[in-house]
Image 1: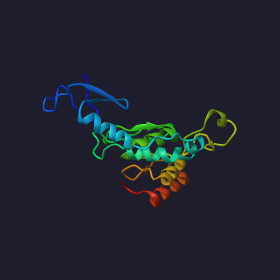
Image 2: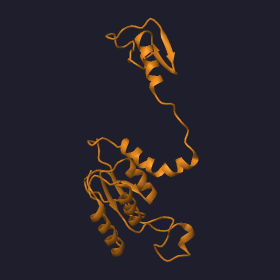
Image 3: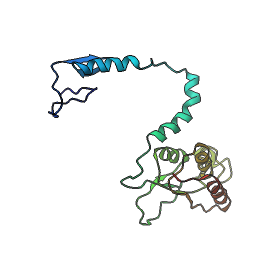
Image 4: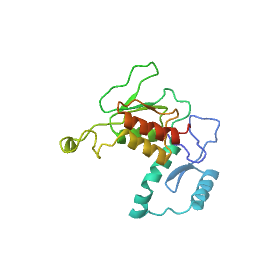
Length: 189
């Protein structure tokens, strides 16, 4: 079945005009008459696209990622809340507030936050990678990151859950630093 990309004509909707013929205008299928002329005018009015250089792409990648997330954020009234639980070992409690999405790394948490999160519970110490497990002291792996690294990223990019994040870390120094950053920079919505 053909559908006009300009007026939306579809054979299932009899209230619309019936086209006599179909035309292809700039790669889009339109019905004859006014739609073909209007689509051609719309295509002519659009500026020509230009390719970006590698330097432009690299420089804009992080900014574009945050902008994309803001433009494609879930609606404000979701069917079920998205709850982020960042911890390398523990599983979330069954608190009756709905299921948690468990993230074991900072990168997983960032990806979920960019899609939109309602609530977050964060741990500070997220373990070590295999390479650092024997070389460095406990919780000193620069490859895995910490909950504090995630909170810094949220503050730098303005990507926050709708509700104020909760810190459930057993590390008192790390938890205190995370709470200070959240208290200073978190803003709802």
